[in-house]
Length: 238
Image (spheres, rainbow, N blue to C red):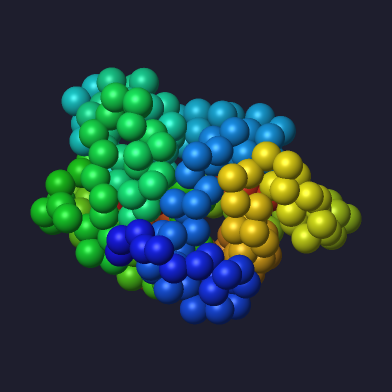
């Protein structure tokens, strides 16, 4: 999947087909201010989520780690604090270029056809990217393919808030507040209409756990963060 010059308007709604070229182009368009926008939209929680993802992976020095959908590689730098060898992979060339100053290996890669041998990694992770893949189940299986037996997976992704009043307020915020903030800070505010809808349409935590298990992972469990608005799913390679 490579970036293209097509308009992001075709992916402005989450219920449309997630054409890989259009999604990559959308992320190319938001790359310049992506990190700043994330920090503003999450009120600084993005750093905490990256730290908790690293801790959940339980990384050791010299282990090989794949950070898929790494974007500008800010998450990869956090993982590398463990002493592990970490590579950032993403299908948006614009995102990888925006993170070029970060000194970690970077690879342009399709989540459905990763350019790595079987069992290449001790641990793999994907943060806030699985729901943007055209076939998330195939991506989970592909992550299993490149992970050694006994290796670990952590998926950090938006979830469904567990407390009903918070869930209602959260979804209203996605619909009204997120676009308003993105209008002020993002380099491509329209893309956040799609991103907000993709969050609302995404699998709740139990459903994602079942999908992970079906893709070849075992010992699947999750931890809710921020009232379930975000969840860390952990698993091991069978």
